Image 1: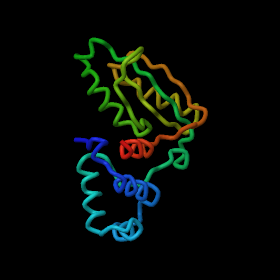
Image 2 (image 1 turned 30 degrees about the vertical axis):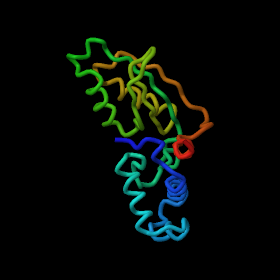
Image 3 (image 1 turned 90 degrees about the vertical axis):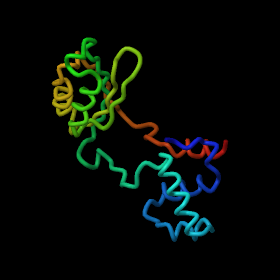
Image 4 (image 1 turned 30 degrees about the horizontal axis):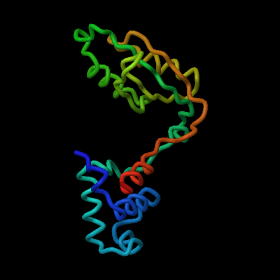
Length: 165
């Protein structure tokens, strides 16, 4: 369940901003900085978590710093008679078992599924692609290698937009 944007107010936006920039700040310090009661901060955080706006508190990790500087996007075509092979759900489980697959989405258009993967090198990317293609329901893949990140994954601007409405 997600919270409609209209239910987010300026305090929610300020709270999200604060924890996005300083995730280890703590509820008490957040209440001091925002000049609201500690209970208010905790209640707002609980509401944002309960409604699926805040989905995690873990650290953001950089694949490059972990030794995976190559990012690629794979468009996968899944066998149309995939019922005997398990279909999209089975392919999703297969992809989830590959650590280098960062995310996968069912898509419209020329392909059936899109996956963002990382690798240690361009040569290692071939190993990752081969592992992805090991699922019998995947017919083929087309790959695009990312050269540079122009806009990193972000959601904070959406929180600002939702609070402004």
